[in-house]
Length: 278
Length: 126
Image 1 (cartoon, each protein chain N blue to C red):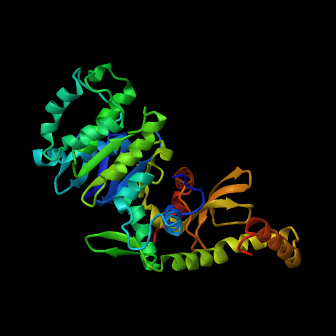
Image 2 (image 1 turned 30 degrees about the vertical axis):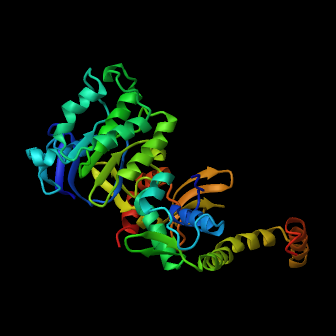
Image 3 (image 1 turned 180 degrees about the vertical axis):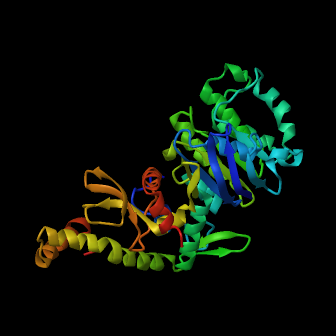
C-alpha cells in the first residue's frame, strides 16, 4: 500500500536525513518503526502523510502521491503526531468539527473506545491531562477507519493500564485492508502487537521484515558462553550466562526480543543484511 | 495473558488453546473464539493468532467450518496429547537429560524418585 522509490529527504542541502530509500509496506499488518533519536522516523512518517515533501524520489500511498494532498487521499489517512494540540472544545464539539473529514468515521466505535479508555465526557479537551488528550486522539484515530493509520510515539504519556488497553484496541482495529504504522522507543509497549519491523538508521533502512521471518533467521535466548561462538550478533551478561541474539542454526523458533533485535541490528548492520539477503 | 520469554508467541497461544480443550472448556464441535476475539483478548496481533489457528489446523486439533468458525476436533484430546508428547520428547527432555548428566544422577536413582513422585502426587491412579 505504501511504496517509496529512491526517496531522499533532508532539512536543507547539507543535512540529508535519508537518501534513496526504497520501502514497500502492505495492508493487513501492524508495522513498528524503530530508530535512534534523530534518525528521521518522524520525518519519514510525515513524508508518507503528505506533511513533508521528499527532495527527490517518489512516494505512493494507496495509489496517491501524498504531496498532492488530494481530498480522496487525505480522507483515507490519519496521522497521529507525537506532539498534540487540541482546541478548547468538548469531545462532542471536536467530533462535529473533525469527523466529517473522514467518511468512514464510526461514532459508535469512538464512544466505545472513549468509555473503555476512561475519558470523562463533557470536559473541554484543554482541561484534560496530557495522557487523556492523547487517549482522545487515539480513540479518534482508530474510529476514522482510514486505510492508513500512522501513529508517532502513541504510548508516550499513557498510564500503565492504558498501555494494555492501547494494545487491545489496536489489535482489534486491524483488518486486511488496513495498514497501521507505529513509531516508538517504547518497544515493550508494542510487544506482540506489531507483526513486522522497520529499523531506520544512518539514512538507511537496516531491516524490514516480518517477525516470523526474523524468528526463522535469528534466535533469541540464553547462551552459557559467547566466546568462540561466531553465530552471536549481540549479547549481554545475565544471571544464567548471556542473553544473546544469534543466527538460527537449529530451526528453533524463539520469541523475538525487540530491544535485543534493535541492538543487534544497530551493532552489526552488515551481517544482518547478509543473514536476510536470501 | 502472561507470556513466557523464550518460546515463540504463536506456540504459546497454541498451548493455551490446547489447555482450554483438555480442560473441557472448549468442547469438540462447539465454536471457539474467533481469531479477532482471541487476538484482542490477548493483546496480540491478529496475524499471530491466525498463524496459531493454521498450525493447530495442520495438526488436526481444530478445524474450520466455512461461515461458522473454528471448533475443536472430536479427537482433539488424543491429538493434543500426541503433539505435547512429541514436543516434550524433542525439546524438554534433552534439557532434563543434560542436567541429569551434569549432576551425575543415574537412571536407577531417577527411577526411584519417579516412582515416589507418582505415589505421592497421584495415589489414586496407581
